[in-house]
Length: 101
Image (cartoon, helix red, strand yellow):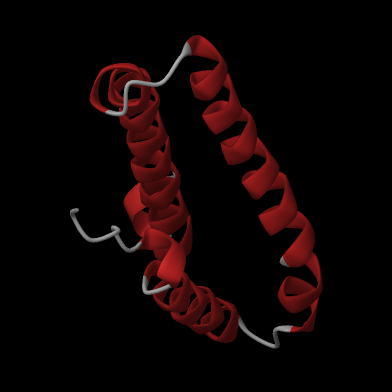
């Protein structure tokens, strides 16, 4: 019997998550230049800084998650920690829009 992706739920879930992440990052990368340049009125330097900040955030996040990933006894604990962390960051003061003047 040949191996199929649907036979292994963990591999299927990881494959779906990676595919969704790649699709999301690809969509953001395409829209980001128009958002920075046209909507925010930024220069090419501003766009470059946004891209550099994204990469720095990814590197810092990977570095910060190495210890919790090793300490997590099971995958569920790591996923719960990531979800809670994402919610706290999403509600942070840096993401609120300033009031209109």
